[in-house]
Length: 380
Image 1 (cartoon, rainbow, N blue to C red):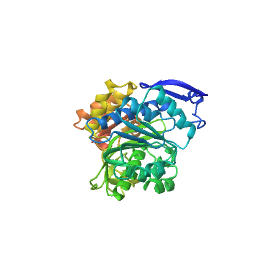
Image 2 (cartoon, rainbow, N blue to C red; image 1 turned 60 degrees about the vertical axis):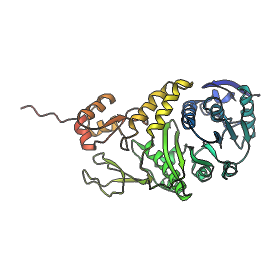
Image 3 (cartoon, one colour; image 1 turned 135 degrees about the horizontal axis):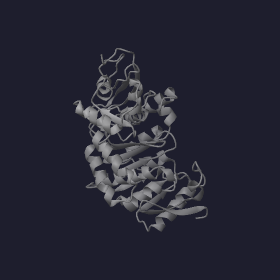
Image 4 (cartoon, helix red, strand yellow; image 1 turned 90 degrees about the vertical axis):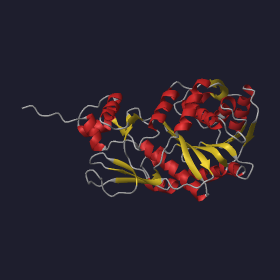
């Protein structure tokens, strides 16, 4: 197609708008494609393949906002998806997707040019739901969660992207409350609070529909927050709560509401309601890791997934080395050394996939300070 260039992402050939490969910000015309999001698509094909490993039922993917079809075409070519339906309002994007499918001799690809919610509503009835539904909008996914959840079969996966980072990170709390049902706080671990707000929104919608969602995997990359959840028939027992943060001593809690810090008694800032349960499913992440050698994905995927596996059973929320060092008014130790010191002090500790300088631990703020920055006795 005129104005397009052929590239290879993963193991899949694609035609992409040539200007998207040269400019700082990918143009939305003639069709949107972000080459910098290749790693997020790597995680997608790994997650799809992990879900479909042993899956019973039609192996169908609905890509509600497919653009030029990069994610859906890779799923068909690399993840074992038998049927992919690519939908986008942009007719040019759909035509580019068709040509890319032909480049790879892909079968089982269908195309739709419609509003995302109308498209998803057509697949919400019995026998029409999909194993995987992917919603990747510009900005907030909140308006699409209801119709997306209705179009996933029980036991299937819903994948949701949020790119409205300013809303989710505390610049416009009123807008966040309206879209996600909760408010954030501006903290070092703000991306985790944002992800938990998105998960809380999905949980609330599923609860209203009489179903449940269980998080499988989450990622924070560039300006993307992305969550993968399993939709289940059984109703959930709950998972919403609050994150409280103390600026006085650095203590944070994920769970119930509190007006003051349990360590120092200072007033706390509160985020929520949001999801306070696990963000990673250990068995699912293990399956994703097992798929890495079988696929052509970025070398960073394996290391990140191993961090996800290590932190899966750890408490939310994470701390950063720079934050703890600033509070202690000293230089930060190496992350590996900090984790080792916490373990030697009798605490569980692991790195987090959400921040290169972050760690999770069951130690409270005072115990962290004591393990990482012990007060040396004065010499007499």
